[in-house]
Amino acid sequence: MHNIVNSNGVLCLISQFVQIVANYRNSSTGQLSAITMALLFGGALARIFTSVQETGDITVIATYVVSFVVNSVLLAQIVYYWNSPTPGSDAALNKSK
Image 1 (cartoon, one colour):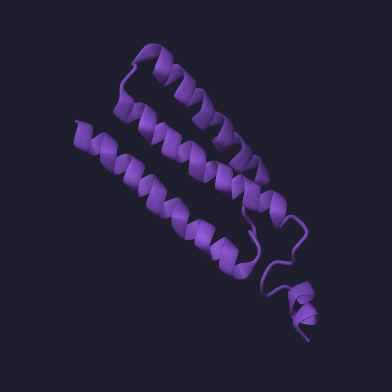
Image 2 (cartoon, rainbow, N blue to C red; image 1 turned 180 degrees about the horizontal axis):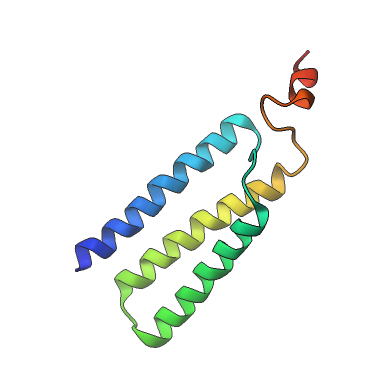
């Protein structure tokens, strides 16, 4: 069972790391939803709290901490790149000329 829980944390990290790198390379978050990321951020924080209170299982807590950290980075990127043009948009094409 612990292998399944551990693999969940690793898959979460890998999948969102790909998004973080793509955002950095594009200097834009594109169509990534600020509301969705804020809800994922809050949900991960709530799961950390409830896991500490209810289970105390370090493996489960670590999985949610990883999720919280990568969601924090993605939310920070949304704030940082808020007004940057989406790659391929007219504003981005005009800016590059």
